[in-house]
Length: 283
Ligand SMILES: [Fe+2]
Image (cartoon, rainbow, N blue to C red):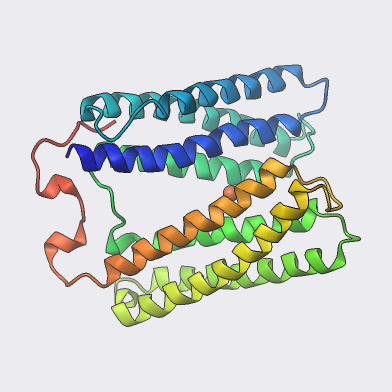
């Protein structure tokens, strides 16, 4: 534990905290003017993560691990509040108590990402930094579902008159739904589906799809940034989609790395906790 823990924590929480801040911003824009209570709650979440982000950039790799553990716990609490807020909005939306400009799937998507981030913080504070071979398929399911959702969001937020872009979004939606179903199949075939040759192909197919989708997302981001796209796409949303594709590719690289490690109990769980007794306490 120590500097590796601090470095990995900073890498991950910086990425996710920016996402959390943008989620609060995006969810805020989906409320109608008279939904003041919800707007205030979204604003509160936004400012909490904005403040956390500023403090995160004052941290560096030489920070005391204990300080990082405490900060991670604070971030976990802020994420938990945001998660609770999104679940409440989802509940109101599905029961038609609250009619917003957001689709329930969009709210659910944000709350899934928040829950994933909370889980990542827990793992970091327990000293587990790397993906485990036995969770490669499950985590791919999580990311493929995100990509499939993104494609659907593009399809709904880009104006139907943008025929080429909406048609491409629809193709990506189908492609990622198919990949997601294949991943679910492999999940139920575990542990036999965890052979390196099977996982190699699985990861390669997912990577190819994400690379193409990333190019599409970058095009949309550019168009949104220059105000050259028809639709109700917020530029922050378009930019976030592109960053998530990049993050997903980094995740797939990590999967590729772990499946090629030689077999052995020490490589089943790539955590520093297995080689150090000074791991920080769990969140
Ligand atoms: Fe997302």
